[in-house]
Amino acid sequence: MKILLTGGKGMLGRTICAELTDFEVIPTDLPEADITDAAGFDALLKKVRPDAVIHCAAMTAVDKCESEVDFAYKLNAFGTGNVASACHRNNVRLIAISTDYVFEGNSDRPYHEFDTPSGGQTVYGKSKFAGEEAVRRHCPNHVICRISWLYGAGGPSFVHAMVNLADGTRPELKVVADQIGNPTSTLAVARKLREILLRPELTGTFHLTCEGEATWADFAAEIFRLTGKNQKIVPCTTAEFPRPAPRPANSRLDKMMLRIAGLPPMPDWKEALAEFIALEFK
Image 1 (spheres, rainbow, N blue to C red):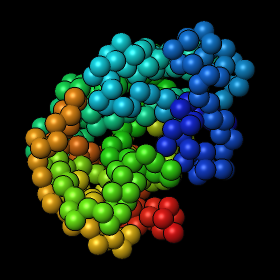
Image 2 (cartoon, rainbow, N blue to C red):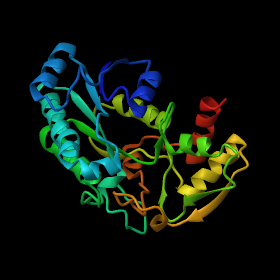
Image 3 (cartoon, rainbow, N blue to C red):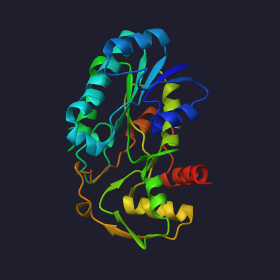
Image 4 (cartoon, one colour):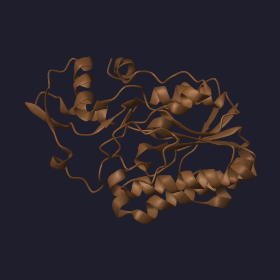
């Protein structure tokens, strides 16, 4: 199977290239693949003739999206629409990566795939939701995969930031304890994408976060336990760390579609983190 990958230089893209060696993965990124150039991307598909596109390219700098609104929508909505239209015209299956930020983040339970997103509270979330809607509108043969709290080889990620901060120079670290989510490994996502690629009949929206839940403070504590760092954590509130883009209080995603489709569950977040740390910080 030949897979064209957009955003190949990103953290998830790099893991997909390293993990899906049983497929012919063709990574693309700027400048050779500009998703905002509709004609150019269509020509690329006609040249490569892939069986599927995994669309990772996006503007993911959440705070930067708040100040660069036009650019966020250009990449995340308009660009994704171009990818979706080109895939439909060329009879190519589309696997599009999205985010928990499409939800408001104020539910008292994990969001499942049949909950109706609003685009959330941020430009990033609204632009990614507009991209989701473009995929649904322009390319029926699609799977939208929502992920969150992602970390992977080479970073940048929360895991890398915590390991770097726990360098022995800080007696304590304040870490947010009033946001909850599913810490998720790019390796776990890539492995599940393989399973989805091997099920060509699957369409729709799937949540691909690891099982189990944690606050950022819980996440940090597990990182320090696994890396053997004796770092004191002081739980704090989101209000103590104001950011341009509001963070969802609840980023938890329920994997209802994996269960319905008969796919194996995602790994537990602690098991996935232990595997990652053993590989990344050996």
